[in-house]
Image (cartoon, rainbow, N blue to C red):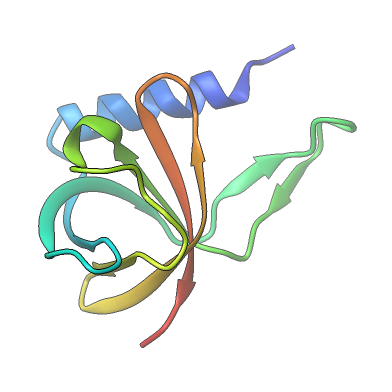
Length: 107
């Protein structure tokens, strides 16, 4: 069986390292904004682990290296990507130094 989280983390790391990640503005709650490189996925396709069928997640996801953040991301943090503001709704750590931040479009 394919280890999808590991595969996604490796792909995201390769993209950011190659310079294809894009600059985003990340603002933790009560903190100062910082520009970091991340990989933005407007509508990611995920795998249902029970059926192994690909499903479309309607929430955009931002993949970001833990080392690029001053603190762990939390619900309510804000991200600006291409001039659009999003709120972090569900941060998920992969245990390998990456975060997948499920986002909600704000404006």
